[in-house]
Image 1: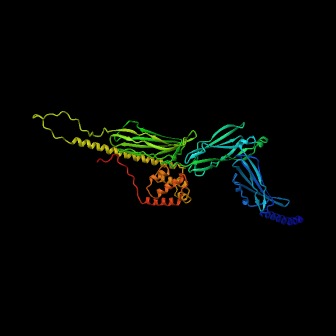
Image 2 (image 1 turned 135 degrees about the vertical axis):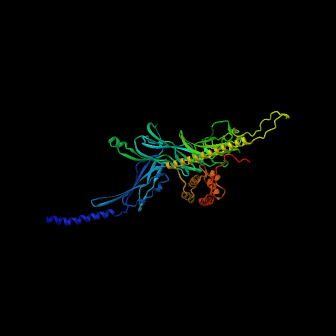
Image 3 (image 1 turned 60 degrees about the vertical axis):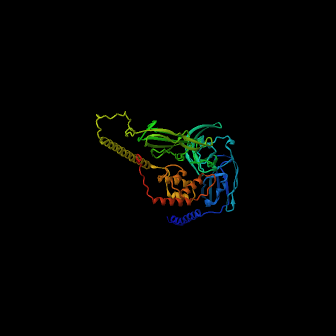
Length: 570
């Protein structure tokens, strides 16, 4: 017992000392690098297929010791993962740092991965061959992507359709696909993903196709950054050998596509609109060939455009001749997808009341637009029409009665009696009372309609509006950073927030604000966005002009008066 206690008293300090030394050894960083190696998991590699680059140092070094940005010219480089480890064998400790980088070749060809250097120790350079898909080895590819554009040459603000298809032969457990990227462009997905099958190089592939609408906001030469697919697929080799198959992570990228965006023609006047088709339709409710004085009718004009976003539709100039009262509702703008293409519509509903009888000529409605199919300027016209307005039968007829034959007075004729005005006064009072009741009923219906519209707006807001909202801080930031696209978006949101302009463009906004510095800055921003050459635009000036405009508008109180049902009689 005494001997065991003595042995334990000697052994315990030795064990503790060893543990302390080992812990200190493991915690001490090791920066002396004696060997640095690099390798790739496959060579050659097909275009659109990822390749893994692994760089190993025989020491614990900081993760930032290697800069992989030197590969950006020929590869799309993902964020590297770094793994540091320490092994102790028979008291000898060895350290290692391993960088693993996923790279996607941008083009086919033969490229050199340069040597990396740490502490004057360099890795071996690597030569990697990227083979085009059509010149592949003929082996079955598990997953690959293909992309295509509906057109490679287009006008500024013209919508182009971009399709990316994922082809896969095995089983995908999970995966994600990024969006294509293009500077100063609006990108949105069109419709739902479509699944199918296709026979390629004698092999049957399943496919998933996703479609995007891309609308560039400035002219120039660009390259669309392709989508990247990251997912887990079942390893075929392990599936053949075991029931419990392993999965492996893959990264695939579609090919990059160039695009040429031409500027707006200098001869074009008005709001710029590029579309595949533009139509104008008119409907009257109730449908009738003649109008009646004082009786309202509803006129509905629908503007439709193909390959256009809803916010690109221009304002319509709906002028009516003197003699009509017009009460126009807020235009209803909506968009939908039809057969893989976007269709936008603007519906303008107006209540029209004729003040006096007669014949009137309603002017035509024109919309100028650029045809993306024929690359020509076109005009869509809603023809004018002649309307007849009948007099209100309930109003007294001002036409004098027809004269009968003249009678020769005789001595025996009864002398004329004094005419009483009682019947005329009674009729006038009755008509005045009916007119007042009609006016009160119209005002009451107008109030109910406004409350209904407010209730609909409140219900839409409570249901959750996920669209962008006006933010003065965002406008200030966009102006400070000279971000033209963000400044335009915030100005249009501000116009909608202030009930200045529901939908439209910067050109339409300029028409709705009073002349001054703010209007000039809005026009300069519009020219900088859509001009042929770069315009020297300063966001600070726009912000200052907008702030001054806000300050001036706050000094003036505005009141909205309902116009009378009938004009004053002179």
